[in-house]
Image (cartoon, rainbow, N blue to C red):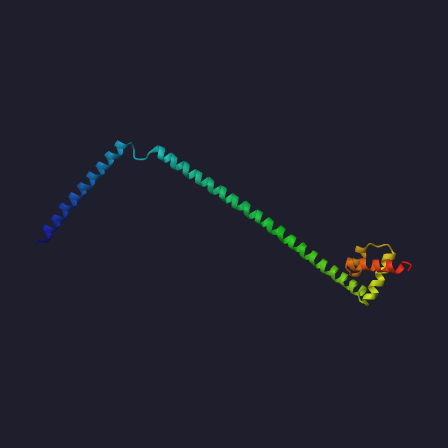
Length: 157
């Protein structure tokens, strides 16, 4: 085969393809005109509305997230403050408890009879059984028993 023949065939094929493309463009153009311009204004308006709603919802979400972040930060600060106050109260309670335990240790350091004598003295001073029990580290039952024994001892035989 001759090169000239091949080039001629190539030119004919290119010309046929060009005519086919032009024909397709003409058919597509005629279809678009028949349908009214190709883009439906109603669909375009709906699409624009959906985009606007989406943007508004995204802005609302971002605002809500920002508000939630601020609220969580405030709650965190409040919890930290309450924790700090609770630690201070616990430390103060430990100090007071140590003081009470050392006082009870001093008051109850002697023999049980010493506490019972102190109970009798406090009964004479007019303290209630509950107050005496609290001061001396006794139970109210013990104090009641001491009161009964003192009363029986003081009765004439």
